[in-house]
Image 1 (cartoon, rainbow, N blue to C red):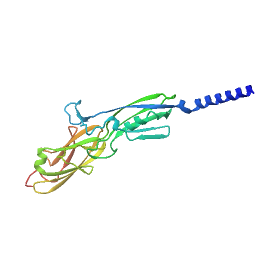
Image 2: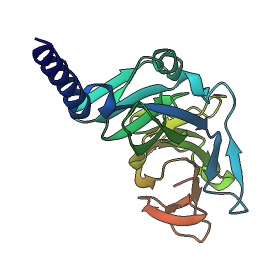
Image 3: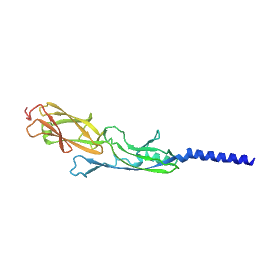
Image 4: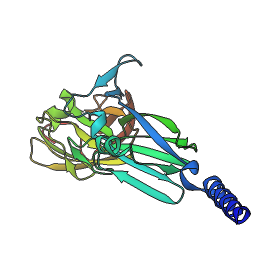
Length: 249
């Protein structure tokens, strides 16, 4: 009888060891996220390559406000904020596998005044035996900032002008910043001369993320009826007009 009980005990221990090796907590680990938000963006018309624009605190999210998305092992996990992830992290484990962690703030693809979108991501390998892997992520502005300026020459011939960027009206008097998705944008202008005749202008530009752009519209003084579009401190588009540069024309 003792031999039978001893054999049963060995079988139970062997089964427990086998289950532990095959799965259970052994094949699970944890993720520890360290996040930093960067408030600096480049300026395309800066006099120095090292010049940066620092966004105001109201536009830059705090680390604990960032949305968390973790994708891996055929699963997607999300938390509304990093603060919520950290609160749940004591109990949260992940099967050992590669995971991509994305932190974000704002609405991806949204364009408009005071609509920044921040994002940063990294990929980590979650270890086994309940150990944790550190995920260090820098989050920065993923869209672009655009401003429009006109020169005195342009304003002299066009006392009235209205601009749109991807159908969003440009308002120079606004204190806010206009955020656009990185990539190609279309800028249109409806300009009116002193004679009340109207002219339509259009140009397409390509924006990089994490950059503030100032697009300048200038009327050529070389006698040619053209509008020069300045971008990255260079003339990137020349728009021909259908009239002479004469106030009485």
